[in-house]
Image (cartoon, rainbow, N blue to C red; front, side, top):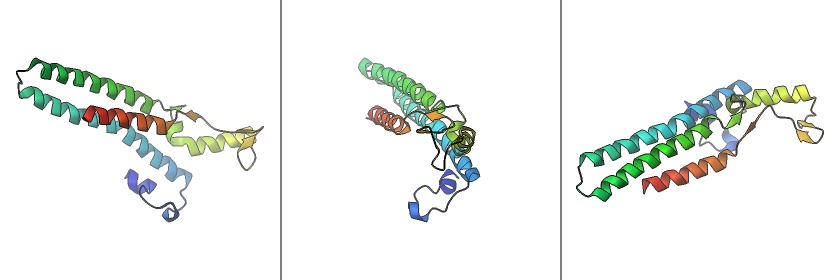
Length: 145
């Protein structure tokens, strides 16, 4: 549904202009996708680790490495889930940024470019999402190896 609503994978020239309501709905699906991805990934990795535990390897170092990997995986799950959840302030700015920015522009009396006193009028702020996604991808790949 998210892919269809937000035209993921389409060339930018092929995407029709979206209304604010369509953008908000797409961003809600995007947030749900972000919040569900890492817990599901952790469940899959946990199932592999449990399977390896069931093989009952007699080497102590293998068992300790599996325990360590389990702890690292759970820490990674928490350390990625929380920034995903609280990536914007206020929280609803993640999905409602077009409407909140529009309201902030009107409230600030900003010009047509959303500029007031040399500053962009915004309804909230977010962390650097690209850095979060690239950092979490790097750690996820390391735990796969």
